[in-house]
Amino acid sequence: MKTLRQYLDGTACEKQLKDLIELIAYQSIPIRDAFIDNQSYAGTENTYGEEQAALDKWADTHIISVLGKSGFVKEIASEEQPDIVRFPDAEGDYAVVMDPLDGSSLIQVNLAVGTIVGIYRGGNALQKGEDLAVAMYMLYGPMTVLTITVGNGVFTFALNSEETFVLLKENIQIPEGKLFGSGGIRNEWLSGHHDFISLCEQNGGKLRYSGSFVADFHQILTYGGVYCYPAAQGKPEGKLRLVFEGNPIGFIAKQAGGAISDGTQDLLTVIPTKPDHRTPIYVGSKNVIESVESCMKKQ
Ligand code: AHG
Ligand code: MN
Ligand code: MN
Ligand code: MN
Image (cartoon, rainbow, N blue to C red; front, top):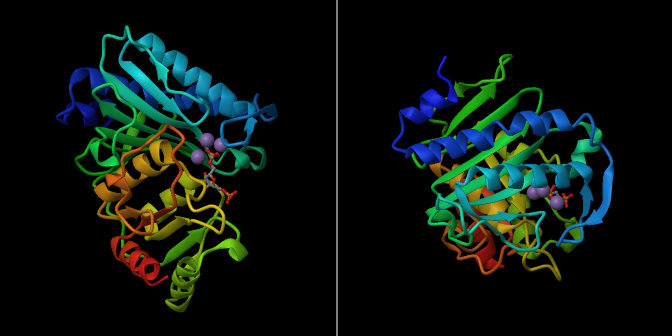
């Protein structure tokens, strides 16, 4: 069985990038193990006014400390940090964007959550999604899996009983499926989004929405369809964050033959203005994302 390292050795990635990817991927072991001990809320809020789970903070501090010590990374943009964390003396020249724990409200109910990561070359964390060198997520479900692209197809690895990532699926393509799920409150949706969801229902689509972006996207990657977190009345920017949620997941979707949009344009072409830049998100099968954009144009 091909290990993550063997896979990386067959890519064009430079050695330091391979080491960085492996270093991040295997942090899934201490993060997963910390679930047992960190069930409570931390009693603090992040930049977005969200209550931080103890594990949100733990995972954030843990990954930042590991990356800081590695010397590979000049900048980190994290959901749990108000500002970009800088390591000007690092020998390496990468920037990492991350959502240390995505779907963290589901920790207490033992549903699947994940860690989302993007890596840029050049040490600057605020770049367009299309310029990512690597996008990956670790999903903590019945199995711990890693889905990754280094810009040459999408691959999923599973952590085996020896705590090694081994190849589970290669060259993954998103099928033209019919699952759909939407965040937000129905009464606050805008008319274009209502129209799009009606279209999904008329086409025999099946509703799937857990409250964890990474878990819901992983399902879309397998079965096809669309994950949405739309703009809403009084919230034109939606809820999710461009830099460490939309861009890495969108880069994976595009590499798998799918697409990501903010409702009007390819999200991966948007230049982030700040670490906490929010955006509406539609991600999934290519044709479905095209129909989102046509519903929004009519709105
Ligand atoms: P996070 O846990 O990193 O703050 O992200 C939560 C996100 C995303 O994972 C999920 O799809 C969405 O927020 C759920 O929001 P609602 O509870 O509003 O549906
Ligand atoms: Mn959060
Ligand atoms: Mn998130
Ligand atoms: Mn998070």
